[in-house]
Length: 135
Image (cartoon, rainbow, N blue to C red; front, side):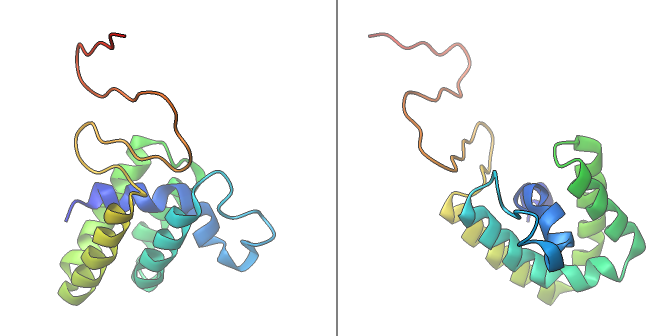
């Protein structure tokens, strides 16, 4: 399993997931697709007890919640999740299944030059080098 994809699903939602008690009041999920939020909730429900039981993992999750686009914060969370999953093969299988569902639903771009769209797109998306559009 590619842990970076797992973090890509969780990162935009972690601030709401960590503060789920007040999530409705704070507009949890605004700015990201509803499908992404639902997949992140399912993943977090499985991971949360293990993350909260490990102070380093909880701190890494809190850092990503504060700075979801920070590669250093994401890397720290990836490492902590990797450790948690290495200790629990059953949890790993459950997370892999949920993550496959998220990727299949298109809520996260997985793989080199992938594009995920959380709304409507018109026009052309180019991910190749030296690509040109001719009319």
